[in-house]
Amino acid sequence: MFHESAVKVDLNRPVTGGLLKRIRNGKKAKS
Image (cartoon, rainbow, N blue to C red; front, top):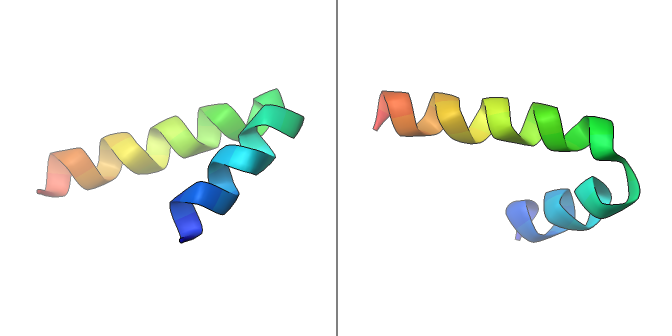
């Protein structure tokens, strides 16, 4: 649910896309 909202915000704010990538990369590294 959170990811879907984040993606929607990403479309409206390109800057948030960079943050989202960092969060996703961090989760992948932890996994």
